[in-house]
Length: 463
Image 1: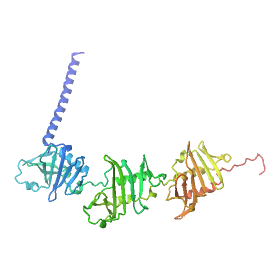
Image 2: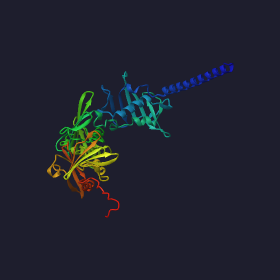
Image 3: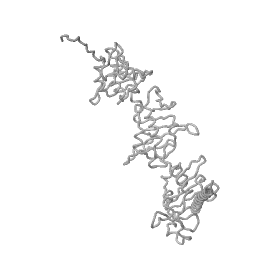
């Protein structure tokens, strides 16, 4: 190694060391500057009490409960809004002042600090006396506000972001979740409304939701999950009455609907019931309350309407769930005979009775109808007029090694000028009324589904 290379290596090492030191020193100065301009030396997680008082308004006090949850203690007692309280606690830990406006405020009123616009008080673990922050008027230029810290005479300049975080009323600080739960842990729902006959109970069985009165019914799992989601997402739009003397004024003596939810909590199985009352006059809202407390609040009409389900709304509307592209065989029984079809090399063929090609697109169109069939009405129980005791068709589909339960096609009925038919999965106790115009067009060909055989005549034969 030459002397020049050694010198270059030493120079490069010194240069890199200088750059690293300069960056460290700059970061340290920035950190010290930030620490020097912090409004308070406090950690958000150490806070145990917090209060906000806006000019000419009552003080709003909050406290951290033993379970770690923040609660309002005045002027009402209730759970606090987690996100709002967290933003306030975080701001107390991170807030800085821009600069000192005056070392001594001879006239605090000139800065909107006497009386103050907002007074923030807090107490952290280990503190016996609370700390204070007074927020005053907005500066004539820019987006800052005047502030004072505790009993200090200095007037500080803080960003408008500090004021906006603490400029809160009771409603904004109050919890507005009707049900504080993890919807993945909901185990059961009991509900009644004008669409139900008595109470309907849904319960979770493993990963599947079932109707407690008849677990054999195939429920639309997505619809049930949406009901759970809508209950978990209920939000209070306004608190109407903390201590209603007569709940009948709000239609809550005999609620129009109620929803009882059971879920797993750290303390065991928890239950809460939401009751829906009458509509709020001149508003797209309904009065409601939780059975566990008296407070009457308002919910959006849209949210309430989403909850108004009947058992038939929750039942799977497709008589049979399958993929028409994966079907490999079909057994078909009509009043005139039985036929078996198999798909070979992408072509449907009749295998019984006899063998031959199926009529072009006949089986594919039948499968398309069955795959797209969605009930416009679902009837629990089977009545004679449904025509399912002597069905027009009995269809068995096979997907590889899987054989689906028989699907029965019953009587045709006309609804709104269009053909419908009753369908029934032979393993279910419900009948599905589905639009059937496509099926009706196929029925004549299904009586004899084989492609006609064209006889070949000898060459030179006289026609």
